[in-house]
Image (cartoon, rainbow, N blue to C red; front, side, top):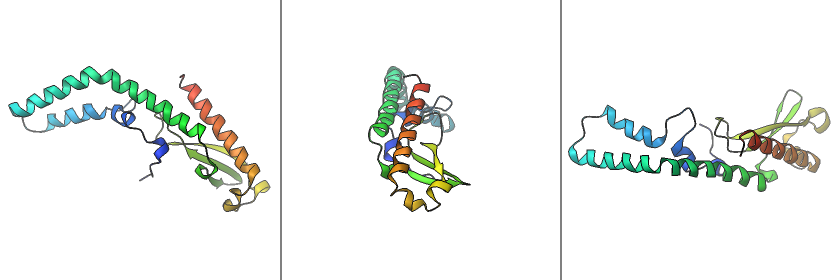
Amino acid sequence: MARTNINTLGVFINIVGKENEISSYDLFLKTQDRLKIPSNNLNTYIEKYKLLVTKNRSVFEELSELEDKILRLRVIENLNPMDIKFSILREYIYARTPFHRCDKDAKDVRSLVGLTSVYGTDIEKYYENEVLINISITKLTKLMIETIKLNEW
């Protein structure tokens, strides 16, 4: 199971869900369909719950959208070299950092930042290389901003 980063963890985002998935509150209500017929007492609470969810659905969705923006901007405005992870694929060096994206399962952004022929193959040394760190921050930030623009805030 993937690790959860606090910079990509929202509240209402997870409740409302993605475009192509059922919301947590609707899933909660559908559970009752698979159980035995509810008592009058239980039915009263289910109906009250449905009413409140229906009444507040647009508020939940707006909160989810705001969380998405907050989570993304937090990362951009606080990008720290310690948040960057490097990896090598063939002769290419990639940098990645946590970044909230509702449309993707991967909660990060990744960018090609260099070549092993220039920076070597010792990943630990990358963290000491200010040039590579600055290139990584610049490219990752640009990618995050482009991602935000694609979603047309």
